[in-house]
Length: 188
Image (tube, rainbow, N blue to C red):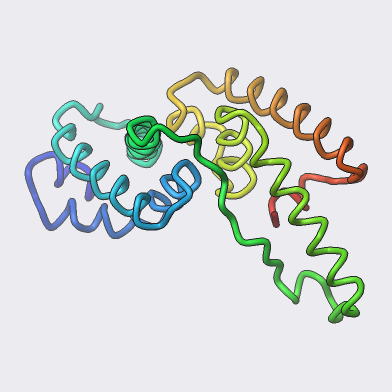
């Protein structure tokens, strides 16, 4: 197992872990920071911190949630140090195959406006709400992974997500999008 080998000081094993988790680490940092270069810096710093923290990693525990918590904390700390509020920066793209036949230009324009309104609504949420929605629907993390990344219990994740979705519904309804569903949030 790569984690155990890395805990024993095998740098090649740790490089394998970095390769395996670098995409998700970058996405989590990007959601928090909103800029690619800052996200890369935060992810790199988080991997360095994780390497030095490996001796404290609990044997038998899941590595991914542990690492994601380090990445999320590093990104939050970096954002705080920059003195600005992060925004969720996501591309509003949808797979053509999921849509079926190509929509007319008018329908495509309406769908794009709807996605932009939804992203604006998500960006308008408090940081904690935005992160829990993004982790679940944009990154598709499990409740356990979210709990690890957010540093809280699974039950807390469920309640935070429920409250965040309630607030998102209020914002979206006020913006005139009454029938937004979870599928649409995930395609943001």
